Length: 305
Image (cartoon, rainbow, N blue to C red; front, top):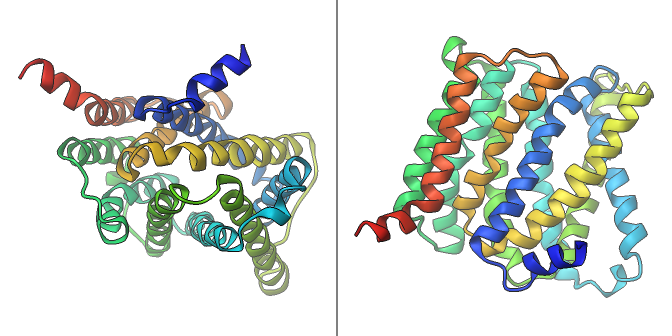
């Protein structure tokens, strides 16, 4: 049965097949949000990021150590560029959260959807379609309502978090550019390697030497969260994203990835006992509506044309 499912998605992939798999990535990343939030009670942010990606790199070596020597150095370098953008996104988002609210962080991170079309035009010379642009504004309206940012004031942390938004936007576009011509495994290896090194440097020089905030108190939940995020959120989900995003556009991929916030709210309700407020329900529905509009507008308009 597993082989049939694998064959269905890997043989002649389509937009809908690949975007369904990207939606599964968003589902897993949505679960990671509350799991990381709980884990950070026992670990400093850079320590958690390092051990998470160090585990991912170990798992990669376990599966593909014989292939690493065969990787094209240029493609590994491209993966390291992707890893730089992803690390910049993770680190600035985490740092920004020290000075702003989770709602502000969620909204500002989600604004990468506005940046992706412009970066896409400049880097890969592809203009977004009408339904994608409309979908972006609907999704951003949903993120605005869901985050509750209108109830708080902007601050220094928000400016730092905006850097995270820029980094994620560049990651999505460059992933589209590199993955169309380069070997997926080489890109993944370069990305995991650079993120592990960068997070280690950040851990040693910032958490340990400069701030003295290093913390990693081992317990059952911290182990679970590290293993889950290292294997499922990173090793598996990022592999799927890097392998199948090339079968859609960066804008459409960004719209699908934004469902992560909806899943995060749902999982937070069950894991953190956070009450689902009216704005979260309405915001989630708007995000879903924006995604569906972008996906099915063309097909529906043809039927009624």
